[in-house]
Length: 356
Image 1: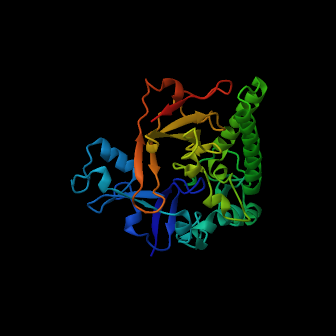
Image 2 (image 1 turned 180 degrees about the horizontal axis):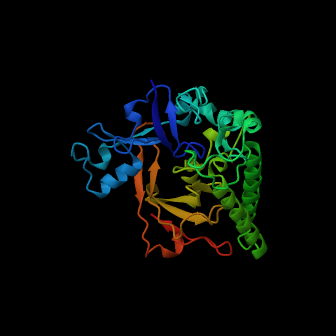
Image 3 (image 1 turned 135 degrees about the horizontal axis):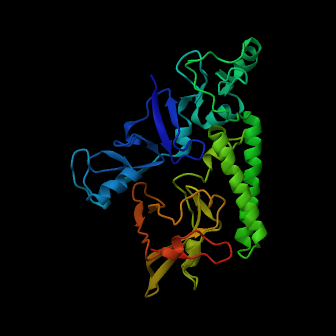
């Protein structure tokens, strides 16, 4: 028995990949509408489960379950997080599995899949330089030695696109080097908003080259974030459609004159780099409310994301003790009111944020 699911919110390597599991996942983990398995789903009072994207669409249409028509209010909806470590224990097949003897027969924990797929699997497909037909990597030499040259006209194989085929290790090594360049430049720019134009130009060139590599070989490029010695990159990946931000020093802030908390480092969301701060309101010496400031920052992927920023963002305040009592706060960004803060950040200017 096996089932295929598309995953989202579990890190860059798995983002929107369709993975074949050896056993079906619990229905409560699967969006009833789009079928994705997300890092967090919403349980309606009618017991139907939706991912956050589908729930947002339902809310816009009037808070009525699209499956059975049952109305609901926000307080009745529960958030059900799916921990990466729990999902990582599930057994899956290799991404190069074809369902028969021609594909990879590997099965193992999902948390081990990236290491296997990048560092061990030899069932990825390449093209023969003689006949241009597709060949499994492990059979490359045998095929080449026995290959008689160009294919006959009318072959069922895909026509040659004269694309460049990278060796996995070479592609990963090059992509890693490019990532280090981009991160180093980004860090320098963040530390010095008035960095000279030369540094900005270097960052632009690095991003352009990375985009070129992605165009040449997008499947290999997805493997650019690799850790063959541990699973830390999979568990702690900050890339994806969700980011977990932790504010520290809440207790100390209660007695401080400045009731503002800031994150210690920038965070990332679908290619955008952002900062988040919260300011508590006091009334008669007691905390009575809180407001947040969402600020877009200069990032390594600014050349490849859409500007101005138009994504729909929601904030979930996690209850520190009671699971299911989280508070979800939609961020209502207005293209006209927040026009300055939604534009692409300028490295030479201080960032502007949107308060909500």
